Image (tube, rainbow, N blue to C red; front, side, top):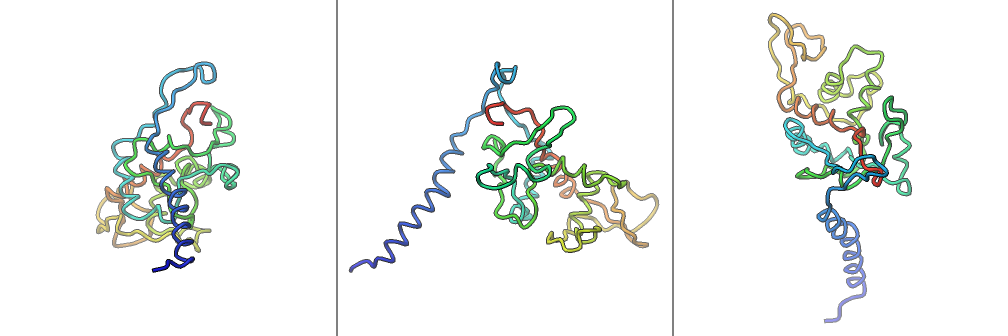
Amino acid sequence: MKVSTNIIISTLVFLVVFTVMIALPYKSMSAVALPNFDEDQDERSDVYNPLRSGRITDGSLVYESNGCATCHTQVIRPTNAGADMWRNNWAGMANDEDRGDTRRETHSFDYLGQARANIGLMRVGPDLSNIGLRVATYIQDTDLTPEMYLYLQLYNARAKVGAEQSNCPSNPYLFDKIKRYGATPKDALPIKDQEFIFVPNEKAQALVSYLLSLKKDDVAPAAIQ
């Protein structure tokens, strides 16, 4: 049977896309080795090894299981692929008090040690590569802690002033609804309710710990800056 031209073309297109989008990235990521600092450029010669453990690891699992990577990326693209480097505090801090300009692109090394890299599928919401530092700018002129800001975001993002049109889904199942009695726990949400209080459960606490760990402030080798 003669194979139609359309089938041949479709097959070739699929093979090209598969190779470029899946096979080659997988091969390059699977062969990643820890980079060394350079004595001349970095004034140190140890191995660069970003560590994540404990509750942060648990929080990444909550992040994955709740589909956060569907709407949020954790990828600072190179300039020839987008303007991520110049978006406010996305790629790092342009004026870090201690280290100056810490902005840099994402590298494969950023995902070392992770069972699954939360690269993301699309940007319905903002990139979260540096959310752990950006939160500090969001809570200026408020009495919120970074943790409480994120708890409120998770509970109902649209309840925040200026975020009424947010696409972020509400996640009330990450909070325990407790009958109001006696002293209010310090981590209870500042929600006006005469009968109940809302307290983040272990999954919410782990998720927020994970989000606050996402910072572009580690000392990386000059070669990958």
